[in-house]
Length: 541
Image (tube, rainbow, N blue to C red; front, side, top):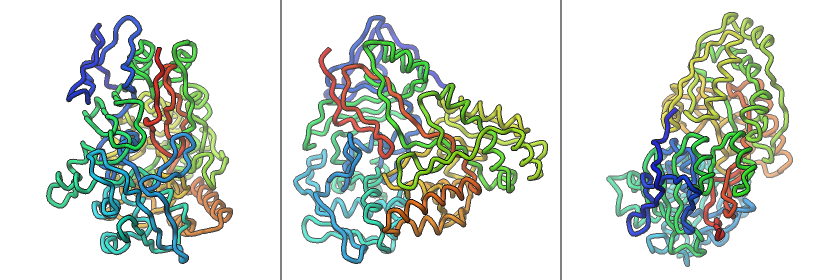
């Protein structure tokens, strides 16, 4: 595990670029209780998974926390209720045949650059997702939009309206929910194209810059160090915080120390022991937030042993679900052995698996591996995940499976995993939008299992799992208008997955953040979104 450099005795904020940037090097702690600037929110988090901040490309948890605050979408989620509300679209409607969706754009809005938000920007941004064809593009292309047809299926109508024509009459809420995903962030075409390189539509520049109409503007990103955002002067409702500084602090103990000394406002990766300490400190508080993030173990079906019938089922009985949930993960997860988070349409509470070494050993013997085998477990170098990995190493070892743990940074894990080069992978998946298809489309659907397909955003594809039985079910569920019937379809998909998929679904995250008592209005995004900073306030101490 990597460690932060030691802190100096003097704590100071160095404001760079006319007050826009907070220097990571200048942030340190004092022996006495410190205090962050009244107009700056300082957050400690693990952000080593960040690879890009282009909304058409970013597909990492930390990226979502940035993009959700620097870009607005056509349809937004209210930070407190997490219900759909107008974003850059004032209103929307669907045609009688259920295939053409019309969005009336709020042309009174401006981008952070000062450029007006135009229907042209919306059309360009949505077409750009399809044409760039980056990892999260499937969220939009799943509606039948392709490079060949996108210029005809996404169009401007008049001065202030945009239409999207889908290939089938999908449930309207499905499309609206999908547009709330980070990939739906609307980009300032004029600004992005000023920095375009060749035909990249500004992608190289947007990896490290922003061109949005959200409440904040990206002012700096240093990989594995920090992200700084500054309030957008053109946003309709001015955020109370002039800037947000997110620092990469991988060690929970360091996050707790910084919080206790007043050097940060929010600590987002604390252990249960740290949470106890925060709860006993009258200057601090704990915010509990049910999240949609699912922790799972996946077995690549390219590996002979893991593809052998019965092996992944045996592994599902070699996980100490209760032991982990009641010890080092206590208060931070609930057991969830299904791919849908609790509360989603179609979610079920079935828990068919428990630690049963004897049963697993018999299943392995029946599969032809009475003495087990060796396998590499790819895991992000974060304390909670390493602890889960060590528990898995122990329990799988009891059945003869020799697990070699391969720790790596978040971005390194994703690069290996998305290239289908991992064996066992311990990962987490969070919903991209508040519809059951957000998880069904990756855990239970795989339209093309070939290497050439490069469906890097699809978990089934990453693990070479063809999902032949559930793929047509997932495709049918998105056009089912009857809500009760649709829920039953997702319930059945999950039960099939329990028996046949290479996914060992373990836990659903319950996030516990430590905060200064004066911090109010912070939303983690709950089960369906990423962090929201625009409503955060800090009262005078």
